Length: 402
Ligand code: BGC
Image 1 (spheres, rainbow, N blue to C red):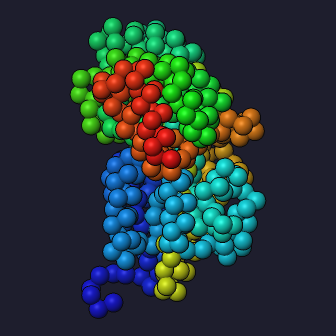
Image 2 (cartoon, rainbow, N blue to C red):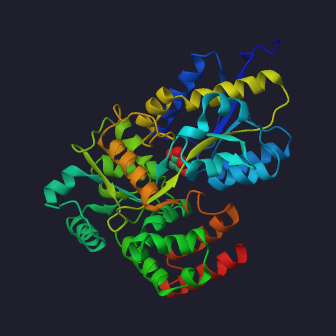
Image 3 (cartoon, rainbow, N blue to C red):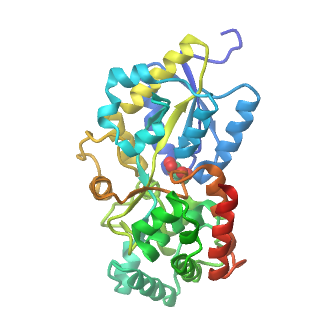
């Protein structure tokens, strides 16, 4: 290259939102893996959990005719871009590597469009988790709660002690992440499916949904005064540092604990949101490859996809990221107790029909519907609506967005 910049023959420019400490550590596993195969990395980070800001940047890049080669993407966004004919085709590498046999159906539903592979899944996260500071629980004599009522009682005990009960960041996607689990505590997995997957308007406006919003009110009573706008990883840090007892967050939070040198079972506990055991609300980070004309770039995309899908990479990456592998044949040997539990629960939920796409992370519905739900959930959490009104508004908003 004459420009002086170091660009390999096969570079990938990767747009992603992995900017927290734990996420960056996981990203390094990926970068190093690609570097070992001489695939160059051009970094395009766009901060913002849940990826909304990243998707806005992506739209601008595509509109300008300059899409990145590889993009971290969630669920229905992948399908949207595929529908617009912007994604490349990974069938050759998928066939050569036998992806169809090892990638769970629930993920393939997003990795394929019209029968063609268009994205490579790097992990499976899930959102209905609680992260707890073990020392605080021990000090206050709190047992791991197993029901919603026990959880509320535990939160109350912490609050009474003067500590923050719930470390939370008031951002729409974080409120929605909590709502994934809370809706299951209120109505069970079938109700979650009716409301968020089938978009049954009666379910969305039902008394059960009012109860879900009541439970959000309860949780709102346990956050600190400075919660508004706080990034999720700073809320994790509150639990890590012993400032707060609990965080309700997807298992990317585990990456923060590990990055801070904390050990599951000793320093922190991971368990399903009480009242959601048996259900898993999942999201999978996938790398969608944009259609590029250059043969070298195509080859780099295929090499990146093959590398992401290798069992050893899936283990090494997910051990650090907090997620579990996107293939069913990766041994759990290197995973900690939370990871092992996550793998077992994923398989069990898939078997039981209680593995459900996360509404908050784009795996239940398209962005228009998701955003309509975000608006109502966050307005309610910030006191704009009471629970009754919120359920009505939710039904209206979703109907309007369909
Ligand atoms: C992604 C995770 C990420 C989290 C917070 C989620 O949507 O799936 O990989 O760590 O957002 O940024």
